[in-house]
Image (cartoon, rainbow, N blue to C red; front, side, top):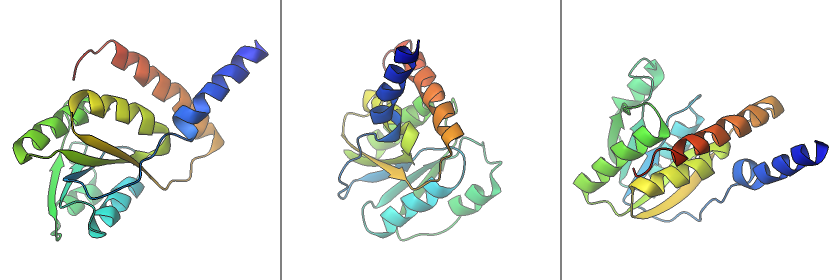
Amino acid sequence: MVAAVLGATAACVPTYVEPQLDELHRADALLVLGGPGHERYTYGLDLALEGLAGNVVLSDPSGGSDKWLARLCGAQFAFALVCFDPDPATTAGEAKAFRDLATAGGWNSVIVVTFTPHVSRARYIIQRCFGGDVMMAASPADISTADWVWQSGYQTAGYVRSLFQPGC
């Protein structure tokens, strides 16, 4: 039993604690996936302000109830900003919406911003929907030990669910 727990924990580290992040270069678009807190949104905007993308896409899975994000989506920037409410409000819903925006905009590359435990699963889902160059970036975040444990279970369940949702 102890060996199984240690084995599972060891398997989770490269997937959730130290996922593959990419060296970022200019992309057609920058997609910020929704989730708790606002760190990922400010980090994504900082990357866009550094000139890494001329199109920024923000997912708002709150359906507009997040007042901070609603104000952000109404602001003017030196780059094009698109905010959307994914349907469904999942990573798969975000990937489908981004695929449609990328097709309409002729985008062939994207920087995807999320938080560390979500990077691997998000990459898997985004790449199922978007055939272009995908670069993953993790926003800075303080994650407690309890949250790491919870995220390991949550992200694993998300991977399993995605196995039963073929295609995009």
